[in-house]
Image (cartoon, rainbow, N blue to C red; front, side, top):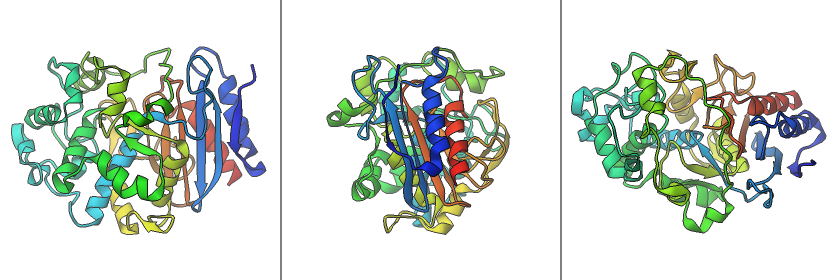
Length: 379
């Protein structure tokens, strides 16, 4: 079957188109594509923007330029930028105790935990270990209150342990306490609407018809040792929002997990971080702010993900896993099922990959790795 592919891909990036087509031709049991898009920005210009396949499982709607894709934890890259902007504006500091802006967070021995420890997954709150109604995630205040009262699952600052859902509430509540708005509101008002970017945290009903339909993974990820941090993060019935249906999931704001976006506009946003902090002549963050956000906070075996990870303030640094091309200063984030976004300040390159057939790789989905490596061949 011939899969419809459209978009822009000049001859110098022929290897990207070949990799994009090959992803659709991969093995039929979960390794190929249903619909996907890959966009690359170089020196502020969109140089590749390929899309193909279908936005729905019945193959009735093409995956097109207006298709919004759920990007799950790739949303964390946007949340990291929103916090970085507060720091850059002097309204927050990475070494500041969270309890200074959110006093209730000091409960259960968490008074010394800093903003950067929260942003680099060191605070010990990877999930709720005790039985919890999975509908709690739809109640912002209830979730934040439970996190504020919770004791860390390991000594904060001693290790990272990836927080798949809770990160969005801790980072988001820090932001709300300082700014007064939710991250979803600030994203739309300060960045997306002024710059015409199709980026959302919490999707209004008016946009739901554009959202791609997901095909779930055919296999479970491999987590390695199932310690308490892993179990709380991923393995309980309440580890993720449940019981409310797809429409409510799209609608709620969870800055760690339910962003909807196009690959093109994710790549364009990250291109500001690959450059001097500006996009279309608008300053989003200073060069010093980029440096502060993306320097290493901790490196080591993550307690939740089965990888050695170098964490910045909300971003995964490329070294040592090199999932985002060859750049040693590159940083980004990946999302459940395969999506990712990255910025390479050494080369002035940013890119994003989104798809609606989810794979089982926790990070470093081979489809995105092939595309990114092919893109660097063209550079």
